Image (cartoon, rainbow, N blue to C red; front, side, top):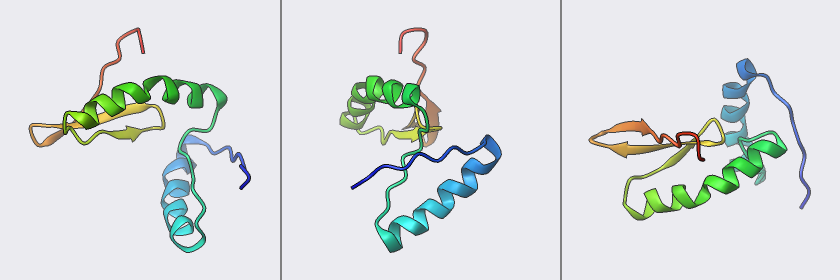
Length: 85
């Protein structure tokens, strides 16, 4: 397996990720939604909080690669990391 880094602009991001879903189904290619070394490190640092929310049954999902949304009272809430996460 090899990795390929593709830089996209914010305006290209949604189309790229939408197309990536089709590519994954047909070719088995996985597209990670974080595009920088810093983004990878931040997501890794936040994985514990994602796992904690999942364990509480709050159906977390990644947003913009490094932000976490979770389901509460029938709506999506953005997790507030404050200045520490």
